[in-house]
Length: 325
Ligand SMILES: *[C@@H]1O[C@H](CO)[C@@H](O)[C@H](O)[C@H]1NC(C)=O
Ligand SMILES: *[C@@H]1O[C@H](CO)[C@@H](O)[C@H](O)[C@H]1NC(C)=O
Image 1 (cartoon, rainbow, N blue to C red):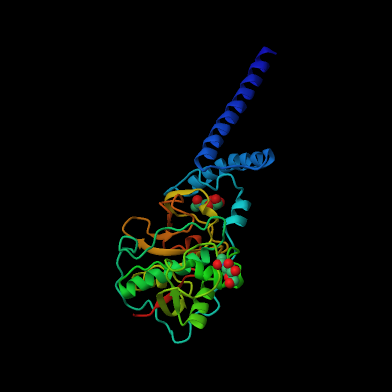
Image 2 (tube, rainbow, N blue to C red; image 1 turned 90 degrees about the vertical axis):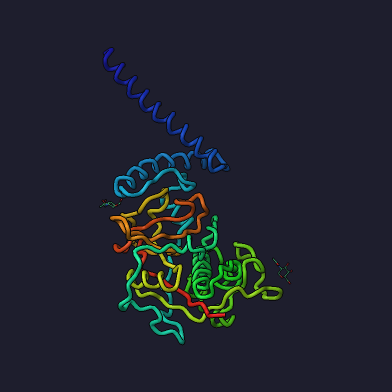
């Protein structure tokens, strides 16, 4: 009898200790990310998700030995909530090659470097933060044009995401969109011109679509979809600069650093930008710029294993071409 009670006590204490630890971690998570919950129910829901996510984080660690995972600002969301808030399904780009552009990017006989990083070469603007707005498609378009324009014209000019958010996608800036459609709109409606971020600031898609008083920052001459090939993506990255890619970002919820080697690739739900790659170590990887602020991953970036279509990275790669000025 006595023995049973002692065992029971131990179990209760262990459960309690576990609970206390969980509450402690949750409190420091709340403080770190300045989380506020509107009701007790909502807070309890967040706490349950947080507890379950500790197990998910451990599973991610087991299946991705070359990456680190931990608490992030998404730690109080269930996987479903993360999906519906941060990710959207993206239709395939409509036209693979725009008029006047035939097979500009080909993978024929070029010796490629083992490493390239457009960030250190000055071709990449600071990491942006889409917040709760699924405006990733516009950030990827702008990051790509800024990069190819830098490579073509030797100057990094920050371009207007707000223009694309306010003028295209039927005014539905925050509900996902198609990067190719943004390129189409620039080519068909604006002669390929995109305005500077300085003359058209903002990242919410709430401004009027008017060009009065705005300054042209870059001009595109066409775009090309890279045909589901990581080889072509590599050639395009070397020759043209940062490239917009679609990914499945479901495995990114708790990413901190290192190379993601086991990444879900079941559906493309997020647009980002490949800004380089590295093949010097035993696991080659893409260097990818995200738009979830600088506290995501590696100062806003994520490394994804190259050559195995991790996160579906080859599925929807696309680049605009910069005109020479
Ligand atoms: C990759 O991750 C999935 C989902 O977590 C898991 O089922 C699978 O076993 C992992 N594969 C490897 C090789 O670790
Ligand atoms: C948009 O234009 C309308 C009509 O000219 C004006 O009233 C409104 O303030 C403008 N909105 C913004 C956000 O500039």
